[in-house]
Image (tube, rainbow, N blue to C red):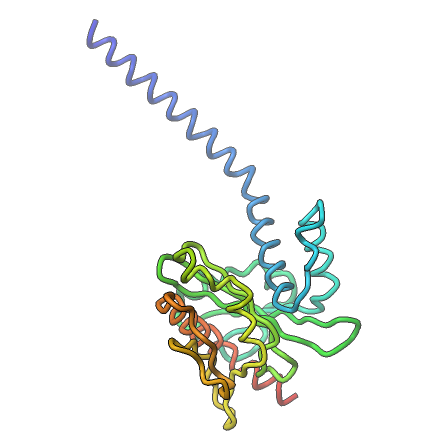
Length: 243
């Protein structure tokens, strides 16, 4: 009886585990398109935020439709480049490209998305994503550059698990706003990126912002993220700036 009982329990458990696994797999397959869409909506929203758009997202009933409409209205072009600055893919794939996967590759082998903003035929701004590793997990952001491909117009950053009240403050406006007006190239045309300075930036510097007090590791990680990711755009920026 004991042997029969143990066999029964084993078989029953195996059947239940199989059923649950099949159901979870089915649910995962059903949710995957929605999850992918949500990821794309978040990317589009961050692109728009970097140029000061999508301001009413908290007020609308249908966030997805609102973001899609704003993105179609203001992002006039999107494409993907390689390290040499050459375009490799046009349009929608730029939103779909996973920078998290790309940064695992050597710089020279990565692909880099570019989003072009323009309002009512006005001057263009170029938005590019950045991604890196913070103290406790991934950090990421988007930089919007003026038409000179040098001056930062706007910046947004976020994180997955940085320390509350310290490194997590990279997503606060008071930290992001000082990036506006800073430049990526020095007077000799050399790429220098932006330094995040512990103890305070030099007010006269065009390449420094203040680090977060108590969040030095995250601040320096963000600095490294900018330098690493933006280096992949240098060839393309210089090409556009001379055209």
